[in-house]
Amino acid sequence: MNIIVCAKQVVDVSEMKIDSSTKKPILQGVPQKISDIDKNAMEEAIKIKDKLGGKITVLTLGPSDAKERIKELLAMGADEGVLVTAPDNVDYHMTSTLLAEAVKKIGEYDMILCGEASVDLFSGQIGPRLAGLLNIPQITYALSVTAEKDKVTAERNMGDKAVTTEATYPVLITVTKEINEPRLPSLMQILGAANKPINEWTADSLSSGLKPLVETVDLKGVPMERKNVIYQNDLDESVGKLVDSLAKEGVLGG
Image (cartoon, rainbow, N blue to C red):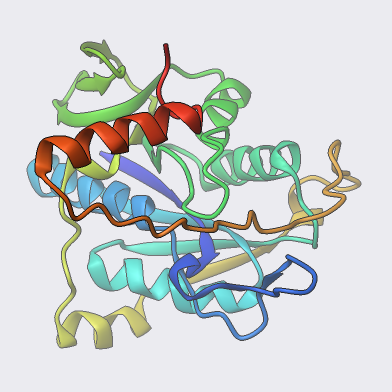
């Protein structure tokens, strides 16, 4: 089973602050990490490899320093990494196109695993876009994955219900955070990751002249001000006041 795990380097949003005067996020100096749900995808890939054997390749689009983040997934259990160095201001069109070209260059594969969305933008676009460009079936929002030699079955989170879907290979699957608990690599695994190969390809070598179709004009934080209202009276009375207040704010429907 040849598995490709798509992973994204993102800023640690828990460490990000907003400039009070400009309302813009302060990104300088914020630590970088692998998007949390991509680690769930990596964990699922390891489980499938343990069951069926094979190889896991981590595919990342980002700056050169993303190699350090790739090593985290190599330590978890991936066999090799591929980094596509990207220009600034890439959009979803560029990202999905470059990932698709990188997958074609990697060669034979049975499964592509992605997180359902990245924790920084949470658009959920890349997995479906990539499957479309590669013309392969996709299973999104997987809560569980059961891989066999000739097919894969996944339970999908569809909000108010779960749907069981089956597909043959090759297939792309996006997983949810609830699917598993990513493992923590041991010290020996972390040291061993330094000896695993990471190939670096430029964007131009995969698709020359590629331009974004969408331009990000501005990025601002949304101010969140709490009212800090505390109800300390009788429980039933407090609940009534709370419901009335929420109704006046438009939080509760009629």
